[in-house]
Length: 609
Ligand code: FES
Image 1 (cartoon, protein in one colour):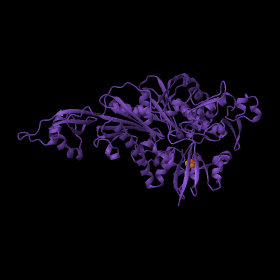
Image 2 (spheres, helix red, strand yellow; image 1 turned 120 degrees about the horizontal axis):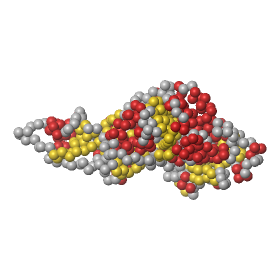
Image 3 (tube, helix red, strand yellow; image 1 turned 45 degrees about the vertical axis):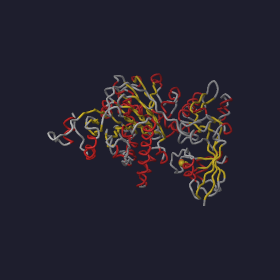
Image 4 (cartoon, helix red, strand yellow; image 1 turned 180 degrees about the vertical axis):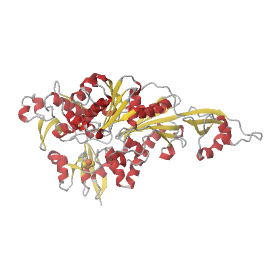
């Protein structure tokens, strides 16, 4: 049996059919595609809330707990908890397009000498004759100044490649090894792609390897997101069934092939003229890309299959570029400090500075690197998903309508991404609002929100925003009738605690690295903030909540998608590619869970100073 489902987006209404018994979350993914599901339908995150009318089921206890009375009264239900057994009306706060996250692709770029690992050279070979009966392979080997790849495909393609243009040929080298012979002079056509596979987003860059010029940029949400927002949920998905591992691998391979197809079509080039793809990503993303089991990364002692700088024939890993082209995966450090961190260290330039730098890449895991040209320490700290808007009552990713900046002076106000009506609050907004609550004494140094009596001394514009929501003290940023979510957008006491946990994890990680290095915080000359969150947060607010030490306030530089920039450097320069290996070897990894004083530091860092 089929039902008609009306989907309301603002004034627009479309009707889609649903099969009886279809899960509401599956239906929304199929028809709207923009719903956040950090727990992948396990019923623990509460983010798949959707306003719906026509459901005849009574809200479950879990729904009551995750949604609260106000949301339930307003018709919100958890999509993953409900199935379709009647005609329904579904109300989406944002449409498919505006629900797309803003993806950071730009970064600080260094000038590096063009010296790619893939090169081409035009060669005019002597055609064979009765007095010169050398086999094709010997003829090629005699002209090539380097080793020839040992490949059956190379041998099979060689006779035609040589004769098609009467022995006018182009030799293609990968890292100095002859890997392909093309008919005629194709030296002007040689392209490469650098990719940063983030847990949330994927960013790709197309380069002309003759000129070093960037031709195009492409970014998209990581399609593995439907299997869980964080690496642990996705690893869990791969261990549940054999298909799980395949689904996760297929999703990223398809995504990168679509990116390559898009690059080729839009820039009027052939996919076969792309010979190299250089990839950065966290250790789990690299495993998923290579279809390696990541299950041992999820459990102590957190062991990856490999962390080496590696190269693979593109066709062997399913990437559609020239069939003799290669995929290069940058090296990782450990299970939780990946190739994205190595790439960020590379593009920041901190590895070649005589002065000490601190690099922070803050996400669900915060990767921290401290060091200089002489030494480097790194660690990864489980910040939890608060900075990405998960586990926060009205938390949301960086989509249109997300509250991204909050100001308390001269009066309370906020801005949203794309100036759209507010739908929730993203990480940068969360840091701002907690910093403002602290500064205005709405919370004390322990993070406790004031009682009604204590709030008496606050300005009226702030006092009226403090109330109880579902038994929790809360600070309301936007009332339900003013925003697109239809319910109060508020920061609850629990949200403040989530943020305290996250900032304490990062701050304690920084302290441990400083101790291990035997330096003082004042010795740090530069702080690099890498990644989307680091790019958008207010430095002042980050310092106010204690995420970044006060002493470093004036030394902070946001360097954007530094992992993507590092992958680009590896694509454009063999020297930079080799440098990633050198960075890996120089880096000393500190496992925080094995350091007893980390817990004490963490507890101390929970307090706002
Ligand atoms: S509670 Fe439904 S996806 Fe998390």
